[in-house]
Image (cartoon, rainbow, N blue to C red; front, side, top):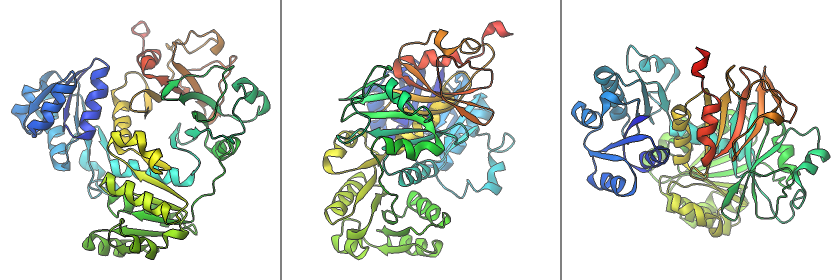
Length: 458
């Protein structure tokens, strides 16, 4: 596939890195010579210095032969115009744009992005995507990652196995026998930096990070089985009143829960604007690194500190200070992937990676076959994929025990006619079933092939 990426920042670089690793023909455009130099020196892609919406620059990048354009510059308007030019002059089939301003995304204006106006096929709003992920993490404090699939009926949760975890040192097959009514499947395990697909005879050990697929209504029970029964936060302090902080605050107010939320915003004008937009949320003006202000926010009695500023270092330091002052736990927004590896040692309980969220959304549309959703795991080491089974798929027909699966993949759940089915050797996949699969990087291409329309079908 030939792909043009406009924007070589963290998100653009991450998308280019992922697509180049899969042998796609990738061109990256950015106005910064330094960023393009870094792309050329690091990745097997072509780099072009220029404006991503200019026709001559797009032409040089090969827009006339491109299958897709992904516009993820810092400016919504540049992203929109780049897609318009790619459509009008070069007839690029698939156009994806990152649009951050919520003004463009109001439901009564969505006709703006129709084919007759601004022809954008996929709109990515990082603030909304990240905000939703933060809300899921707040609702399930025992999980280190939570993603929904199959019309929100299936969840994939990442669960840390602690020393007191009741299910460690027990074969996975035995767990199935002990809890036959629990529709949960351990599809992946991360152990000492290595990610692998477990077999029925494997055991979880303390320190493992288990990836479990289950039904939405059984997530809490599953977390409890793993020894995670942390109560949901009722007193929350949010550092950062930007788009994500505002989204989360509004969502908490809409829940009509008894949760008390306080927001700390460093810019006075923004703090005043937040106070006007929020009804039950207390807004404080100042730095989240100011211990006096944190104490004024009653951080010592808070259940959760959620750091959502644009500065990774502020997010990390303010969360560490919050815990030192008595806050029970923290959830931190971290953009720079180099911070992820040692965040835990600093006292960070959980973190959200906006870049990973955006890349996952893009991959959903890059993947061939009937792929409905994709979630990126550990910087591309694996993916959780929701795919629709076609009549020609090798999965359809025989019992799963007779299907030759590629190494590095495991089925977590099957969604059929509004019901979730736990996979078993006797289960037969039917056409239009939606299958949730955990696949290591080495198996992603083979998973794609299993859900593509065969030429013999026509």
